[in-house]
Length: 213
Ligand SMILES: [Zn+2]
Image 1 (cartoon, helix red, strand yellow):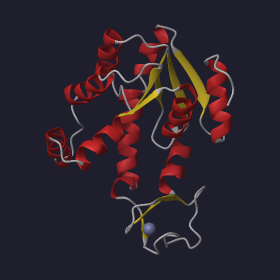
Image 2 (cartoon, protein in one colour):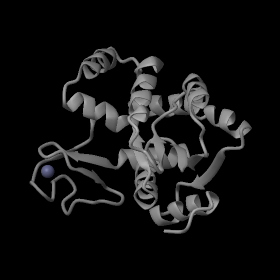
Image 3 (tube, rainbow, N blue to C red):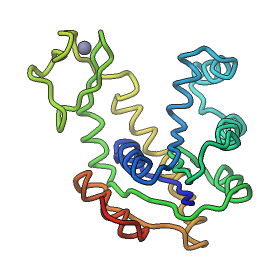
Image 4 (cartoon, helix red, strand yellow):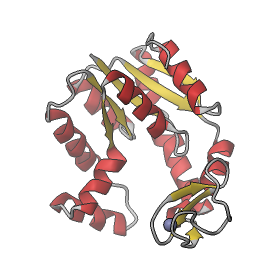
């Protein structure tokens, strides 16, 4: 059984890398962001709490995030292991997690802030059908028009320079230091996230002693 955590700043491609690993090794991919979005989509009580908090501009508190992750992990459908994406985001969450679960490795995808900025600023979303584009590697035929439905492509509100700078600051000051905690337990492997998807995937597999893709 493999139990992994995957970490990296926004735009580092960790969701894609986690999915590739999950598909190959039958791991259960737990994306905290996706769980949040699912709760909001089906209007759960939890979603109402999360929305109220986010509307005031605050981060979702540790207890709620821990509750979400715990609840998901106690639903035993991860026979071959799991890969956790989007958690822990700070030292308190990391300590909580290490007390509750054995982790085999923490995969750190390293991408400099300047590259994160370039990638995030190139993101566009269709205002009609919601499809995601990226002007760097998933370009629409016409820069401002959705290929599928002809809707206008817009930048998401949370992709402003200002919002991104705040998220990067949070990541660098709160999330990144948790790596030290995992490093002390010799759990961390690093991958160069500026490389292609295939390259990053194989670097991860090599360092985890897993067969190549
Ligand atoms: Zn569209």
